[in-house]
Length: 328
Image 1 (cartoon, rainbow, N blue to C red):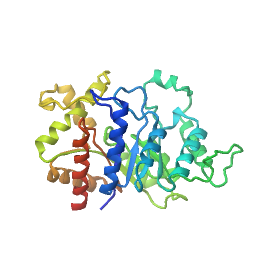
Image 2 (cartoon, rainbow, N blue to C red; image 1 turned 90 degrees about the vertical axis):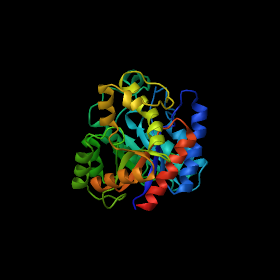
Image 3 (spheres, one colour; image 1 turned 180 degrees about the horizontal axis):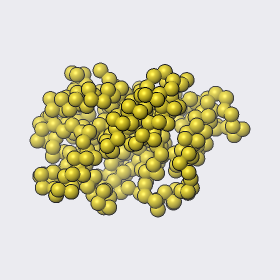
């Protein structure tokens, strides 16, 4: 069976704070490691009241330091916010501290609004070619013999595995051209998933890092002991998505009975669109949803997302999902 991995934004709940979120993140990572998950990735976002993973490299170090075997990485670092040298130094440091366990996923979006992006001090007027150039420059900094005169210390020779993240065909083409693994954000932007995957596989060129295409797809799972309980737990993320897309981002709200059924037509259409790659229910329901998704996409790996208000319910969801994987 294909590997399952975990995507975490270290959500801040309505009655919580960042400190509690980091505690929950480490506990979930340790739980995922015991359950046999392949990777534990954290995502860079800025200015989001409900997301605590802004300083992604620091949080990766926190998780890697509290685990022993699971791969830990960025899903991803939003490279337009940073100089390639700084990221090479950060991930060279992480690789030196936790050898062979660090992944570096790179995204092209800022992970914020335009005002926040300006506050991050990066050039917002850059052309479309800058992201590919930055990726190549970053990989060169981490190579054994960089072509550049400047050296990343730590970083040179780190050879941290690099992934390209995307929600369109742009990332698919870049990953194929560079011979890198490709992770698609189908857990919240599924519209171009199949087109991007087909384009990546068709255009893939083998590289020193990767001999054949490797596709990891985001997939939401809200698993519980009954379909009804799972449907209730899923309403926290549903509310958060509607609030975000309505210009009202906030902390992750508690589950709301009847939320999906009582939502308006626009809200239901939004949820049907952005959360179409989702399984909600007891193990048998989740198993069928995951099985159909893998058969449809041919995914090489699944990145499981599950934003739940109750950290214990979230751990239980990943536990049930691990059991589903073993039964497929």
